[in-house]
Image (tube, rainbow, N blue to C red; front, top):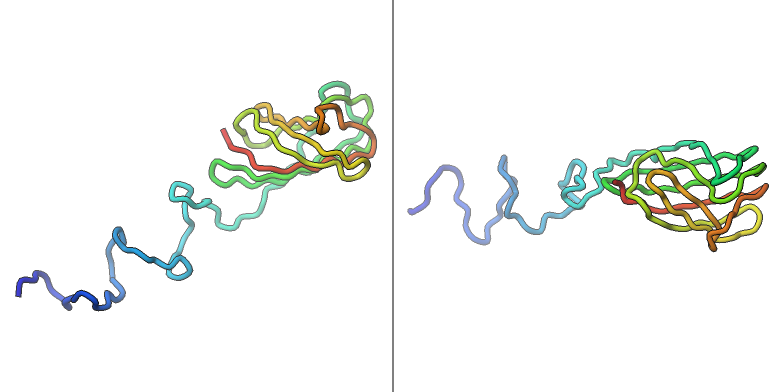
Length: 163
């Protein structure tokens, strides 16, 4: 007798049913496997990704000093919010006069001075390290000496925080 409004009355313990409208601000126990549509944005703890493909690039490869005769790079990356997942393969067919670090420019701008690892997979199997200096990726052997030589394939991967 003290209720206001129109429609069916709801009693404690009764089924709420399917609301026709409203904002689900105070609901609990929402099953994410059913009834959820759309893409969860980064601001809400999601990735903002809708299942998009990775982006590929073939950046120009240089060295700290000298020049490569024949070299190529295949870069694959995916940006999720402020993170960038990536893997790259640098194939040195003929080193020429190149020496020092392997360098290539990253297509998105990461925060500076992040580091990670990789491996030379075609000849000697040395562990590699990488570090970005601004948007330029630097690759060296595990002891920071040069990995550059004929017939080397240097594979690196990691996650970068974007600037």
